[in-house]
Image (cartoon, rainbow, N blue to C red):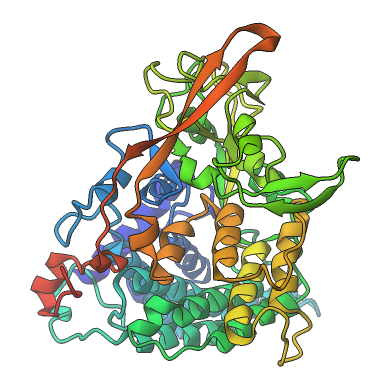
Length: 567
């Protein structure tokens, strides 16, 4: 019965992948009347089974609303799941980010593949060789080994998705069915430290299989490459060295995290794209900055959700940046000739800043946020009270801003035009920032005792330089500067929610009131001016126990585990 359940599930998943908006990998239809043994002994079916494991990766665009569960944003929709977090009304019974089962299903499918990989039969390809050309057989042989590396990486990815939510979790090498309570009765949770090291070991095994230099005709775009494996390991170690993880038993060091990030850098395969905006455009798949991403088919629902309401057919489901977030972008200082000479934090106590709050800001602000009186899709966006996209209009932004990142401004929602989108799991700028943070905490701003060839200061300034920001000095580089730089660079990419937790600063950032800007237009025409006033939008709830998710109560009932502290 379990065997048939698996095959039917795989068939259902294959059909769903072909039908939905995601165009991640091409999955072939699988006959439901075959056994597990037949499934994995059949080379084309085994390939489809492996590719199906990718479908358990996070749906980044569908979860974009979770940025509104941080101090970066607010959702316009009153029904948004993020508000459950902001009100503090989630628990072991109700969790809008309930990913336990999805990730363990992904792990189960990875384990099924790893357990049965030895039965994949490619002898028929060898027997079908005519003459001296055996390339098809050798390609199949290499691909079977490559698939093992993919399964190990995906398993590591799913485990990290669990660990950053729940802490220590059960480490499984057998394909246990999450829906079968009887198989889980005697399974125990491992410690946080054991779980992190297990994930690292999976990455190391995968990296030993997937070659750093791959040139193969059988490779399909979208599959894991060596750099992605290294990038995952670097991120895991960064988290493991962070304050929250250290306080909960992690023995991972900042030096280890720095070394892992350096391994990605030394591959010399990735670089920062010259254009920050291009990274989030429909053409981003062609940039050398992307390390691992999820392909989506042509669509426009992201634009329908997030375009300012002045555009017909925008639906008012926006994730709108907060004033807290906008204030994080620095102000450029310029000399009389207009040359940038430095930068300073933005301050509402500075009359020059207040008079024109969006002038001379970090260029990443304009690439991320639609501000009042700015141009978007050949339209002046008015977020002042009474403006074309401002209150009191229905579904207008509550914060005074709209999100431009990830949206294609060229789309026409009236004619229903669409474009491709790619969600980024890993990109090179994150690797540089991971390296900078780890190096700084291990060795300081300007020391490189491991002779990696780059200091923390140099790494963070590479990221700033790409966007036209002046370099930081050693005296300016501190933990606060690192936190700000990560936020303005990596916002709305599913980092803030976890970064603030691992820094053990969520009670500072997430419990603080979320602010908006109240904008009044004075006069009309070309002489019109605007008055800006920061107001509190809402209070938010956060308790220390929320650094970790509660284990779902159904799992506690099934296993008898102790619940995470405080829940």
